[in-house]
Image (cartoon, rainbow, N blue to C red):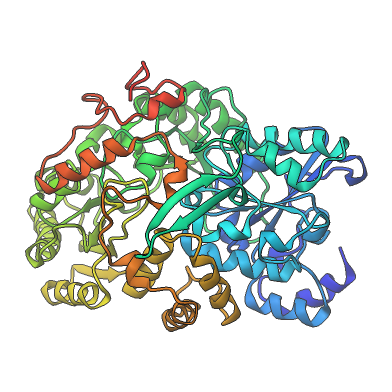
Length: 616
């Protein structure tokens, strides 16, 4: 370790964030490498080490003999200050080398609030923010992750984006880089060729023009040999692709210290507010035997005592009964618990409750999303109050007394009666608890967590406007006035954070200058309540001529060119429009297991579990 780094570790909180050397880290001889990657997670070590995507891509790249991928996380502000005093540039954990020494610096963009930390980390690394300012001597900056489905707000900072799933795409990108570097190609020549690889978007090769009203006039490729739209990459065979079974084991406590089994990708549901539902389609499952093998290897290599079955809707995994039986055949003896993420209330069963209750007692989480059936139909949340109460009673029968319910406020067509329905639904759960003869002796606690609706790209609600700040806060206060009784706890998300997130989610390239100004004013760690500063962003928007209402509080015309129209996520715009129109008629669309709605995602290949033939 660099002596300067070692000297400042005693001056900062949680020095284990910065030392590397963990069991499972991959060390290679850098002198023999043809391509070095620094994979950056723009949040703390504890959060980044709990993200499944990073170890998947870290391992996939490191399988290549002549490629070395290392890790880097956002330093906490106390460490950043000490780095500046010591004249240290941000480094990668495995080698301790500064990021400027790498060939490729990659950022995963999980959410819009991490944009400020990308700039924060580039500054700490001594790397110029704008791609146009980085010549041949600077690393290539690549971005990926969910937030890149609208990459435009940060497009001027990145050389290239990887759109979609990266296990196969990033090694292909690395092979092209190695080949062209050996041939003596320039960065410009390499990026031009990279733009021809399916799934890679080089923003500098596309020109955006605007109308007088501020909307987009056209998106034009600068060359005829690059695609007009970037089609996302998907993995066709999830059982055959790389999966990490020997992960890096952190020295310090992280958000999640457990085995994560990714059961499938995609979602058969069609919640109209949900971006993940669309960008991760088509639905592709892993076999239960494959997952059981992964679990056994991961337990042997980590010793973790919890297995989390991850997906967007775990209850919809068709081999869930088989998988849980396979896992319980050995996890009970090892005292390993099996946990599931938020449950679908219409798919939560007594049999499932018995299996997940075998070791650990804990509460359960459900997501009704809206307080009335009318609004649940609008958003295509195809569950009813009876489904919720039945699921809760199953939980109460098995000794559960705490339930968490997720809701949104500000959804399209929402009224104050819908808001009041959230409180009534929570009261119904408490009543059901006391009417259940098998209930536990402990008092019930129903927590309702309410976030603000944010219109996101690639959803049927991408054309909608967000409620203005005053109305969002009025609705939050209105719900609070209807919460009664000691058995209901009400938490809500900051409306100011939600507004800034909406502005960034629907932003275009003009947003970059506001992000730079916000960074100059001190923006960082915006996902953390103690750091987020709404007034700072409003100042940055004003000083750079950005009207936040234009992005967050304006209904977009259905014929308008969207900033993210350069991306093809597989789900067609015509499908999203059909779903939007059905929402306003209060009509629901059944899930994929009932019938194919023709979303179009199966044209990407990797036969959808529920639509074996390509459809459009």
